[in-house]
Each structure stands twice: as C-alpha cells, then as structure tokens.
Length: 419
Length: 130
View 1 (cartoon, rainbow over the protein chains, first blue to last red):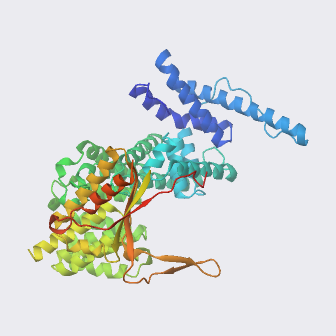
View 2 (cartoon, rainbow over the protein chains, first blue to last red):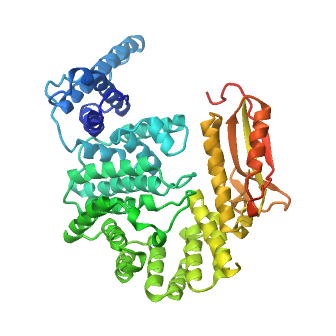
View 3 (cartoon, each protein chain N blue to C red):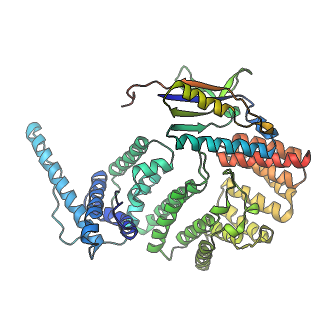
C-alpha cells in the first residue's frame, strides 16, 4: 500500500485494520480477489484523504464502508456485464447485488476467521504463507517476493492461485465450529511458525536473517494472542518466537557466519523481549495444558535465563526434550534430545543416541545429523573424525551462513591439532 | 548488456575449503560479500547465487516412460558451476574486468585464488514467457 504520506501511527493503524476490513468484506462477498482489490482501494483512499482531513473517529468503520461501496460497484458492474452477455447467449445472470449495508456489523474475530481461511489445510504451506502475509499481514506482493527471493511475478501467481483454491473449495467465511477450530488453529500456528523460521533461519540465500519475516510473524502472533489470550498453544508460540528472536543480534559474526548458542555474546540479547517471553511461558505452563510450543518455549527460556553458557540448566532441558520426544516423532527433536543428553551425561552418551537416528530416513542426507555428530566427536576428543564430518556437513547444507560456520569450525579445529 | 560470470570448480572443489586456515576462509567470504556490495553499489548487479556442493549434483534425463532417471556418475574431469553473477554493464571489457576481480578472490595464504570464471553474454529479446 502507498502510505508514504502518512505518519507512522496512521500507517500502523491501516496495517492493523486491513485484515479486519478484508474480513468484514469477505463476510458479505465471496470473491476473494475482488474483495482484496476493494480493500486495497479503501486503504489507498485512506492514505490520500486522512493526511488532509485527519483520521476519522471510527477508522475501521470508515474503511469497511469504502471497501463495501467498491465491492457493490464491482458487483453491479459484473451484473451489467453478465446481463449484456446473457442477452447475447440467453444466459441467466448469476450474481445478485446485495443490499447496501448502512451500518456494517463489526466482528473482532474477523482477523481470526481470515487467518483460518488463509491457513486452510487444503492449501500447500507455500500458498498459505504467501496468502497470509498478503491478506492478513498487508505486505505487498513485491515485499513478499523479496523475502522469499523469488521474482514478483512468481509470487503474484502463487497468491492468485491460492485465492482461486479458496474460492473453489467453498470454504465459508465463518468461524469453524468448536470441533474443527482446534485443528484449524494448529494450521494457523504452523503457518506463522514457518514464517518466523523462514525469517530466522533463512532456508536459502546468503543472509541468515530476514528480519521482516520474523517481525511480521511476531506481529501476527501478537494479534492472534490478543484474540485468544487463554489458549496455551498460542501463548507458548508467541513466547517461543520472542525468546528465540531475542538472540538475533548475537547470532551472526562479522562475515555473516552463524555463532552457536554457547559462543554468543549474551550482552547483545534483547532483555525486554526475554522478560516478555518469560512471563508468557509462565502463563502458558500454569494453564496446565502442555503442548509442543509451550515445551519448546520453556526450553528457549532456560537458555535465555542462563547468564553464561556454563550456567545453562541442561538437566531440566533434557527432561523437557524427553517430554517433547514422547509427544512427537519429529527426528529434529530426537537430535536435540541427543545434544542435551551429551551435555548432561557426556558426549559418548549423545553419540550412542545418534546411532539410532542413522536409520531414520527423514534425516538421511541431512547435514544436521552429520553436524551434531561432528560437534560431539570434537567434544569427545576425536578431532580428525570431527574435522572430516564438519566438512561433510558443510558440503550438504544449503544455507551459506551455516556452511561458513561449519567450514570455520573445521579450520579452527585443524589449527589446534596441527598448528 | 548483460553478462553471466560463472565460477566453476572440480567435483571436490568445496572439500578443498576444509583444509584452509580459518582466517583465509574468513578473508575469502569477506571478499565475496564486498564484491557483491560493490556490484549493488555501482548499479551493475542483476542476480547472483551460490550453488550447493557438486557432490550433491544429479544429472536427470527422462526415461522411456517420461519418469526421471537420475545419474550420479560423472567423469573425473568434469567442471561444475559453483555460483554465478549476472551483471548489467556498459561493455564486454567491463564484464571481463569484473570476472578478473572475482577470479583474484583471496585463496590459501591470502594469495589470489585465480579461479576460472566463464563469461557469457545473456541474450536479449522479449522474454519467452510473456
């Protein structure tokens, strides 16, 4: 959206209101693409009129009115067009113009319903991510394309196909019933988690962080938390994001290489984000409901609370990974469980657990298992084997910062062995 | 005019890095970052990507039923694309200059690495997908 002329407060207001306005419009008209165009036009109208006339008393109502008016115009135009065509082919008009809504009803849950729609399990995760950032996050297609390092035309097509899938799947724009809600909420949280991770550990490309995506995921997560403050999974995921993102400044070195947790300069960690995350972890855990996000957040909290790496409460982290492993058969959890075991019972105990993971096909060919084995062999006093595996892991990772880190780790060890 | 500068290496090219001292790896990475910044700064950058290790490369052909047949066996002498830059420059000479600069990236001991950089002009014309 073009909001260069607006001050930051108004710009923020427009971004926060955009999904609610889109939700209110979609409630009345099914056509996703046309509704989005109408909302964009309403936002542009606001961006030109508000600096001149001031922000209206009810900015949300103002935007919804403008968007609904645009949609009504659009539908009337469609009817006129189809009527002309119907005259030609003797067809029947399919679209009925709705009444003009003088006082549109506003439902604060519209943002949530829109999220449920954009993160629908029928969509691939790539489509759901793109559509969520566009429709709920209010990012431009160009911004989303840049974040994912693909051409704008490619991203535009991905978004447009996602909208078509939603239209053709006949997903109603309404709150799913209680039985379905839990499952749909978990899709939403998964998509937001993927967006956060894409920003935090860029899966490809030269830079480890794509800050905009992480910040956007946190912003959306805050919105979900505001709507569902009592949901422990929601609270847990927001906590996990804040506690992870708090370490961002300490996570890369001078040439963009990854710096592992135990070597980070902890004075660079964001104390405010950690304090907020810790309070959320307490709230999530005291609710008594234990889910994967709460557990991961609790583990992140234990790391963030340690003033030095040596102060880390590894026995408790190991216990939490044990619980997590019983809840999920994710091999990455098993890998982290092996690392925690190594920290508590020594590297040999960790290496023994890795043996079992060799057979897991989901980790076959992954650089992660190789890299963890290299670390544990280094700690176990087998530098030559560790150097060889650091090199093998470097050859397999597709992340440049991670490759650089692994190469430097091997080089540092070689210098120690053979100065 | 646009040129593609292609950095090639042998199949075990990436493994050689593991025998470099840490400060030389850092110097090499720092050079690549500053080279990329320089191309952005001069307005000549179009695109650039680094590719994963050649040991992960597969050659794919369609079988009789159209299904992919992957082949991982390559002749020893084969050179692999390690990464590339596409630059938009005033003249072929400028493209060669940039290629020479990339070729002189620091190697072990800080001496120029002298990688072979293949320079090819990107053909112009309307995009075929339009």
